[in-house]
Image (cartoon, rainbow, N blue to C red; front, side, top):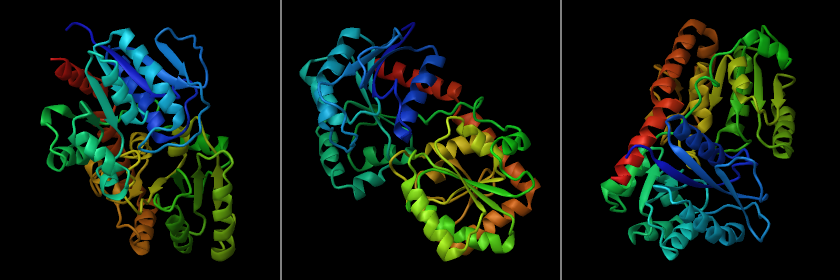
Amino acid sequence: MSGIRVCYVAKETINNALEGHNIASIRIMQAAVKAGISAEIVSLENTSSCSRRNLHPIKSILSKDGKTSVFPSMWETFSSFPAMLTAKNLNCDIIHLLNVTKEMFLLTNKLIRTSSPCVTHLYHSDLAFSTQPTFKIRSLLIRLGIFNHILSSNQRLVHYLIRELKVDRSKVHFVPYPVDVNRFRPLNRQKLREKYHVPTSAPVIAYVGAADSDRGFFFLLKAFKEILHEIPETILYICHPDRKMKSLYDALSCARLNQRLGNNIMIHGPNPAIEETYSLADVIVLPFQKPYWITAPPLVLIEAMASATPIVTTPLDVTKEIGTNMIDMIFTSPNDLNSFTNAVVYALGSQDEARKIGFRARENATKNFSMEVVGRKLKETYREICN
């Protein structure tokens, strides 16, 4: 096979939202194109027109309700038939289902009898199957063989599908999430702090993500009070994806009142140049308190690795697959306030060693998660499926 044509079925490719699985879908397609794969994109959108020749928007007769679950919303249900019919008519070698809810599209695929192999991308880890009731239905459908080929970006789910759900090994594939290491790279910290009005001489720890307890946001606020006892001039820089940020301001108002955090917290809303947030900090803090299964591994962790800024995080679930304690990141136990505080203080106080950890993280990201590396793995996987 000289060239591979893949039809990607996704949503919000034109007007992409900030959710991790949407961003991951776009990056997967970018990595594929970089590897020389010919991509056709069928995208569920609120628009019916697009200037890109290879992008085919599917506008549903219903407006998007904004809800997601393991079962498709009505918006996706009504979009599944025209989307899969378009995918069939494009006559590609493979159909790859990305961030759409899968079951309705797979059933439609069987109904219209497409001849191309169908790859389903599952974004979560195995934890979803044991914690989310609706995934029990997905387990049954996987056992029944409705899912043809399954692609995962973490090894835990691969092992779970093979061991627990008895999926044929030849039908389960692992390809990591890609990161653009040319975009996410070390940048001039001094200039970035001037740009974002961050004190140039103060130690800065950065948190990227929503004000979510599972992501460790409220735990971080408690820990930050202890960090200020050790290094009073430290700044906590928060980059939050919610444009309204009401939940964030409510949380911070309460924290400032109860913990007297003063003016040491700086807030930035959604930032299209998110790579600059990673580089302006001395330390990235991602204290996940529970395995973050929605997009596993979290994209923010791989982005931070590529930036070469040292990371303090927790070795939960998929996190342990991509990093090693004191080699390319610093691990602390979940909900261990002293351990986390000491780790951050160590990273701020031992800058030479922390810098080495950060650059080893970038080496890891470049070697295992770059667009080029992931693109080649995608190409190899597609060839394996076609053959």
